[in-house]
Image 1 (cartoon, rainbow, N blue to C red):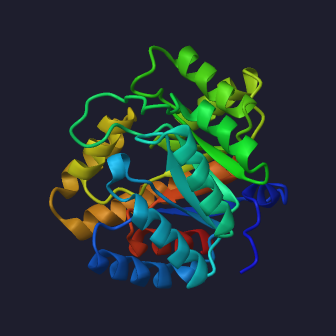
Image 2 (cartoon, rainbow, N blue to C red):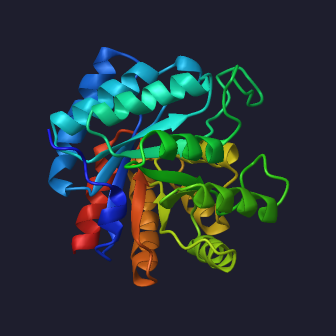
Image 3 (spheres, helix red, strand yellow):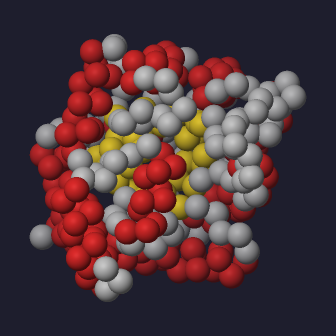
Length: 292
């Protein structure tokens, strides 16, 4: 197959981009379910999709498997995630070469979370400390790579302050990152303030808002606790009223995300990235709503 286009070239078209995030299933049955989801989403024609990377070796092989599946069977432009967790510099260089040889030209570049059961990130033997160092390594190894990095509109949970977190983000961009995708948020003013602070700090690359349609209150509370995001009181109240009525709750979550996306695009966001949790329903509903 022809190598993927760098996502940076898509941003250069000055139109909003639409992307989706998949995570690698743990077994073959999960892979088949993901294949069905990808098939349902193919008519949506996302500009690119990403595939997450398991900490501590949990899903690393399946990241490669799923990335190849989405690229060869469905023709998606795929951005595999890559993290520093548990890898030496040489191992990361070898992985980068394999990704490049597979025709991929885009990587989501992350430090990575500690493996399950661990409470803090530990640098592997002869490994890398953070995403900035990984960006530097990847750009030196394969200059053609287009690299995305993560941004935290409400601060990374481990950062001591917003200013410190912004300094780390700028370093990633200065090392060669081509764009930023944000962690999830549910109040657009959070994103707008984040973009303003980034621009004031000299960060000029595209900043893509990350959106997650709410599927359950307990689930979204768990996610927000992990990534340091907040839930607006109005949204919590609506979800609590829905209680255990799954259909009503999902409709509310999709409507909230639809309102977010419309506002973001109207205010000049370069697109949006959907955290879909390997489910097609929310992404298809949002696509239909935006087309209406």
